[in-house]
Image 1: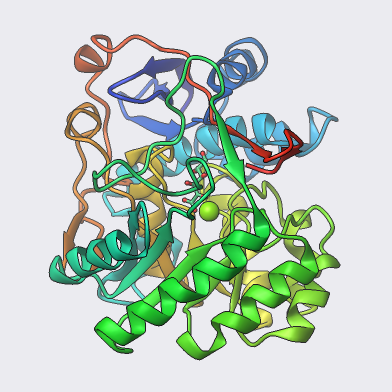
Image 2: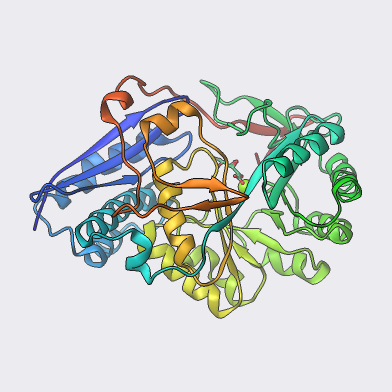
Length: 402
Ligand SMILES: O=C(O)[C@@H](O)[C@@H](O)[C@H](O)[C@H](O)CO
Ligand SMILES: [Mg+2]
């Protein structure tokens, strides 16, 4: 069996997605997601110029060997562009293998560990009142876990505040838009949101919050402490994680569970955090961290230390990643939660899929493969549009972490 053809498909049904389609000499094909939000075409060129020529003629059943070839063989290891390209190949090959086996992907991974996958939705609002209402809306929709982000008075376009839709789409400008940040204002305001949420809805739902890398370690520790009475499911990206040691300081001060890893691309980004039990949830996902083959290694390491998974699942992760992640989540023994930001109708139409939401859980389907396809004719109707993530500056103009 041979790989006959591989193509990259770029489409923008409201936002950009990069998809790799691998076709075999036996008529079976697989697809993988390679989207890197705000830097999409770098991955397109990496795939087209440097990866696809090496794939043609190789045996698509040799998933592990192809992974190692692309990782070790490049000499230049890791990084978001490389690892997304590898992820796209890996996912397309798992799709092919599962289709050939006539099985849904989770069966190949080891079978079902649970009936459905608990997901968290994104509730946000301009201020506490609006955010409390938004959380109520998610509770009404049946969500068991809800992430709450509020605008902060005096802070321009605070992170995570949507525009009245079920999703928050940050990459929306032809050049990066400038948002604001003020740590002391947020440190005083965010705990009030969670106090109000617990007061209004009680303790029956899981609540989550994303700090989006904004706080220094000691500020993150302060936030974690202030949030303790409200029993969060997790506090995410409370401080940047390039220095994994930084989490030790946060950890020493608070029992609020910590999650990190949506921007990690290999096990090495998370190794110290996991082995030292500095976090509770690892947020790496399929497209970000080298596909099923590599994410499985991360999850296995994490399981030794009782760290659970919490795959990133914002709208820039295409339905291909979402579908694959759901098979992964259905199997992985140390599952925690899956992020679920709904895609637009246009996106869902370009990527027909068999997963569905019911009562706060997502269920992967039973179609052989990962259960997500691409409608190429429809995809062609939405040409690529350059879009950037915003940047953040402090009041005095200093660049900060967005
Ligand atoms: O937790 C999350 O989902 C995020 O932090 C994302 O909204 C993130 O900002 C985007 O995926 C960036 O592309
Ligand atoms: Mg996040």
